Length: 491
Ligand SMILES: NC(=O)C1=CN([C@@H]2O[C@H](COP(=O)(O)OP(=O)(O)OC[C@H]3O[C@@H](n4cnc5c(N)ncnc54)[C@H](O)[C@@H]3O)[C@@H](O)[C@H]2O)[C@@H](O)CC1
Ligand SMILES: Nc1ncnc2c1ncn2[C@@H]1O[C@H](COP(=O)(O)OP(=O)(O)O)[C@@H](O)[C@H]1O
Ligand SMILES: [K+]
Image (cartoon, rainbow, N blue to C red):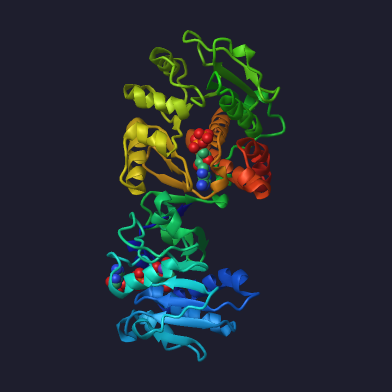
């Protein structure tokens, strides 16, 4: 899995890579510039929009200068505006500056006429991961000017002004796209930075993951190539029992959709037998959304051991009494999935946290998480709290949202790469609960169930939203679950 290393360690990674590969830092900057220009090609190949590159004094600025040269070779109209005396800029900046070809309009910021043609492409190479204090002076003035402009705005590596590992501490460039090198910087994954980062792209500049491994500090980014290894395989003679028997407890009157969605998602994820137990006086009166779902009536006296996995909470309501809720932890000793009102009940009765079976999976969205652990000043604090909750209670905490975090009991924190904004629709969390419970029931180790559930859920959302966009609903995500297995060739 791709390690997310700290901004401070980027220079050490570069140095380690350059000395092992026997290349110079200037060569590495060239690889970064080439990968950026390759990535930019679809936007520039058919039009000749003017491109304005704003370069700061460090190596991020150096990237910008190298990119200016490469774009000029592609016959683009390039304007380069640099911020500091060239002699005071980083060595690689200077070397690139001296290689600039003729035909680029080059100005120092303090004498620049300030004109930016309409419909230009703006490239922000002012600061990268070396930012160490809030923007001020000319840097602040520039970013304020650029933030008022429309059009295509792209940040190289990280929006200027944003620190790599913390919450923003001042004014930051607002990008529509951020093309970051080699791995996503932690702060690019914070929801409060969504408007600064825009769409996130990770560009490979040739540094192999194992150079990053040496610097890993427990943060990882989950990509498609990683997921196969976490799957169980089934053979020709596998029978229904191998695929697990699962149960969902939830859905009070008026919210029957919730466990229906979870149950249906579990079927589409591959569960052999799926039961749903609505929290209603006569659960057998509910009509399941698909005939393959079976109804079940639960009582605090019956053992739940016949099930391979259970998922509790979607649509449950808060009328569930404490003794009944607590009885579930006594009646089912295996890892379970706890979502929605299951989490709200835990927030109401925090003393029960200790009774949850080890390695259970808790799936709060930000609001449910706040009810469990209180408010957080920013996402960094939230990440740490999720990790503490996981470690203290030996559970897996899945903090949902864009780049869903999987916090493992051993302290590792895994950020998901799949999913999109169209998944912010009623019931998509219920679908995740269904998928996670299904993987648990199929015998996946809880950590693997969490990883596969979160990844496939996001991928199903991406596939379903291709044709539906804003009109996508949770059932569409379920219908696309089989396509995720086809896409990954998981048989
Ligand atoms: N492996 C990689 O990730 C690579 C990184 N490269 C680029 O190098 C960048 C990092 O370069 P640097 O370490 O030079 O960092 P920056 O380019 O962010 O610049 C840091 C410099 O700016 C100064 N500075 C920081 N905050 C300031 C502020 N608020 N006002 C004024 N000055 C300030 C610092 O004292 C330092 O001199 C990356 O973000 C990336 O763009 C690429 O060139 C090559 C490969
Ligand atoms: N912008 C987004 N990008 C990626 N995934 C998202 C986004 N918005 C929501 N999701 C995903 O959709 C699901 C929503 O869950 P939740 O908030 O519990 O919904 P509900 O309560 O309606 O079922 C989560 O898995 C979350 O990660
Ligand atoms: K930048």
